[in-house]
Image 1 (cartoon, rainbow, N blue to C red):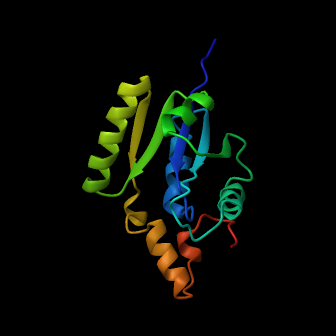
Image 2: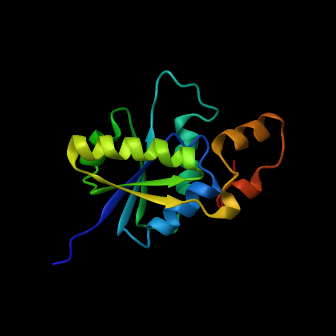
Length: 153
């Protein structure tokens, strides 16, 4: 019997960008199912409310049944356990991203033995971050090129 490989893809996703979308699509080559986990941090002020962030992700993956979206207000490892995921999927744009993700991955491995799979960002999207997209939105610039296909804000 084949064992299902489920991963979580955690983040704030404020907003979910084409870079995030690309990581999930590539992750589907490795995993049977990906649960996108929107972490809720009560002390963090977000541009988009949680409902809009869920909506953006659902729009992006409306034709992909292997992707679901959930919210969590806990440690990522606890969310992974609750989602019955064997892996954490992460994307990195730079060496500093990698150093940060490696530290977190090592802590998560130590805490519950979960593996983290890190994918390098597609070079075409390496300059795109949620912060850049929020800044462009603030100044009323067109951000459609930075969002997944089929997403309307």
